[in-house]
Every structure is written in C-alpha cells, then in structure tokens.
Length: 338
Image 1 (cartoon, helix red, strand yellow):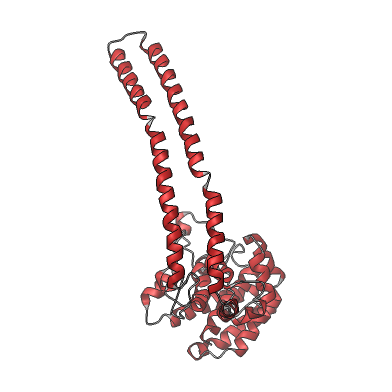
Image 2 (cartoon, rainbow, N blue to C red):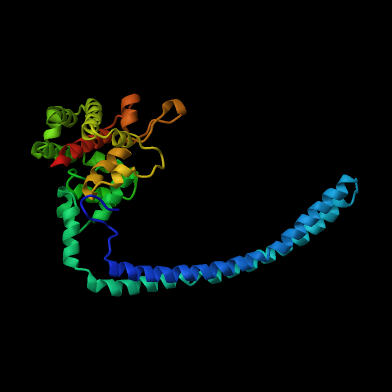
C-alpha cells in the first residue's frame, strides 16, 4: 500500500527484490512438482469412476427391460466401486500430505535466510523515524506500543477513527481490544475523555476550508458533554455529510465512492491512491457509510451508521458510543487539513 506521500509498507530496494524473487521462484518450482505428484495420485481415480459409470449404465439398461435382479446387481457393483475409490482417495490423501508436509519448515528457513540477508541493509534508526513520522500526531507518543501498520489495519477494518483523536492511551486500548464488543465498551467507558480530546483538537485546528462549520461542531460537542447525546449525534451526522461534500466538491466520483460502502467491498481506488496519513482519515468515514436498506430487510445496526442515523432514528442506532464515534469522525476530518 503506497500513496502520494511516497511511503510504502512493502517497499524494498531492487537488490532485495531480486533476492525475494529468487526464493519465491524456488518455492513456485517446488509447489509445481508437488502438484504434479498430487495430480498423478488423483489420476488413479479415473478407472474406478469409469467402472461406476459402466455399472450405472448397465443398471439403467436392465431396469428399462424390467429385470428384477437389476437393483441387487447394481448394489454389489457400486459397493465394489466404492471400495476402489476409497482406497484410491486414501492413497491420494497420503501422497498430498507427504508432498506438502515440508513447506512449514521450508518457509521458516526462507524467512530466516531473508532476515539474515536483509538485516545489514536496513537502517533501524531511519526505519523507526519513518514509522514515527507516519503516525498521526496524537499517536506519536505511543510509537513504541503501536505501529503504522496496526493503525492502518484498524481504520481499514472499522469506523472508529484514530487520526487526531483519541489520545494515545485510549487508541492503544482500542487497537488491542481484540473485538468489536470490547471496543464499543471502551467508547462508552472513555466517552467524556474522548469528547474532550475532540474539543481540544477542534480548538487547535486551523482548517480554512471548514471554518464555517467550527461553531456547529463546538455546539454538538457541548451538547454531547452535557448529556444531550441524541441531538449531538444527529448534528454530527449532518456535519459529516457536509465535510465529505466540501472535501470532494470537485470530484463527484470520489464523493460517491466515500459515501457508499457495500458489504465485502474492496477499498475504493480513490482511497488506495491517497497517502497513508490521508487514507487513515478517510477509511473509517467510508466504513461508516456501509449500505443500509431497511426496505430490503436490513436490520438497524448497533454500530454507528451514517445511513441508519439519517433514515432510521431509534435507540438501537442513537446511543452514547455512536454519538462519541460520530464526534470522532467529524473532528478527525475537520483537523485533517492541518
């Protein structure tokens, strides 16, 4: 994954790529040989399968003429064929296991050799500095506990943002939570702390393109902190719509891509082309736009959903944690132009 900021998680220099290609080529050749072995074992099933076909044709032929012993004859024939197939599949399974058993050790050996070869070429100090630079400002103090890859994977997989808010300690807890349920509980447990993080971020952010929205965001945050979370979530949702529209005012294709996230959809090309930092802002926004069609039987989600918040107001969607999450999304996007 790479972007306009010039960084890539998978980047290697040309020499290292050549080394990796050499090992991968060796693996590919080994796999090809073992697949041939498996195919050879499987080919032994052809004869019994042909016998089964002939037996079935014989049964059909005899049954057509009303021969009463046809059923019992077919039963005996199929039992014999079944035994042949069972024996052949047992041999195939054994051959396949033997062919593939060495891969675990082989890959372990390759990884060790690659590590020994690449270690002298990597400046660990520079690598660590790059990791630190790519982390959002709010997470740099936690750079020894989390990596850029962890942050990216987290925001790619859900709608909780990590850029700008929350603070590093809460972010580390969210990343390490391990399940959606635990993350939801953390949003509830740290709701006031996170909302105050959002306030601090909005107060310090200079965002000319979004400046007209500042008083609305501040009012929504004040409402949330004073216990008026339902009203706050509604306002945050409208603010999120406005932020997306302003951000992609000159690119309607990108606008539509961010606002429509189908189930099991791949990350849109517009987000793949962004730099790492920018993509980490917009991925959770995209995830928050998961399609919701109540007329098609979709149930109201427990997680924050822009579409459900707009089209299906109910207690299941409007909650403390979803208010907090919508505040985080709005604050993260607002401050992203820093």
